[in-house]
Length: 299
Image (tube, rainbow, N blue to C red):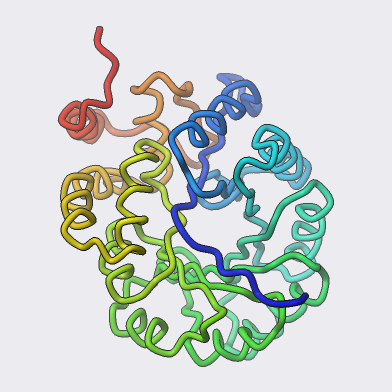
């Protein structure tokens, strides 16, 4: 690679719409891509946690990525979720994403088996050697059970095609250290919507976002305001959207965001077990937040 590309801006972690019988809803997937592009999103990230990747077959993941790339038609890039806690499977998913036209991959830290820092390094090194695509690391200890430490990130950043980190540790001290020490050609992206504004103020390059599924235009505007150092405008948008960011996690994500998109008329509210529909009390709270933001269709 001639040089690392900085991944910046607002990237949406796309949900995967399902039909009532459990199959992928390809028509609504294409409609979601069109909605995001029309609303000004900077990039698409299908088949991540928000896309219910643990419940997808490898074949479904490849087809979802292919359809997203096809529907985007080069208007925005597609970075594919392609992680696994088994290194050879992560390599296979990464190579599949490359074959169907992804512009890069987002690779979640191995979950459940709790590797050492050396294990993390060897896992990601193997992935990076198996592809020409840019690889973005994804640290989310609340789901994986272990933390990708800054020292390991910087070791990995020496690989020519490991280009960034989606950071969702929730550890502000760690986040500040990452942003203080990052190489100039390495992107730090927020992996937690509510942390995006403070991370932008500290020098982050953008976000891979859940809330952008519902409000792509204002959330993208907030991110761009942060990148332009327009702090008053960005803070105003952060405060306006914060109730929705929080509501998206009143139950395990992506349950609330899919429920919200169904209320907005964009998808049918279908999940794959073990995810299931929201409790009615939480659904009522979510509907109230959407109503306050004017996101519910009249009638």
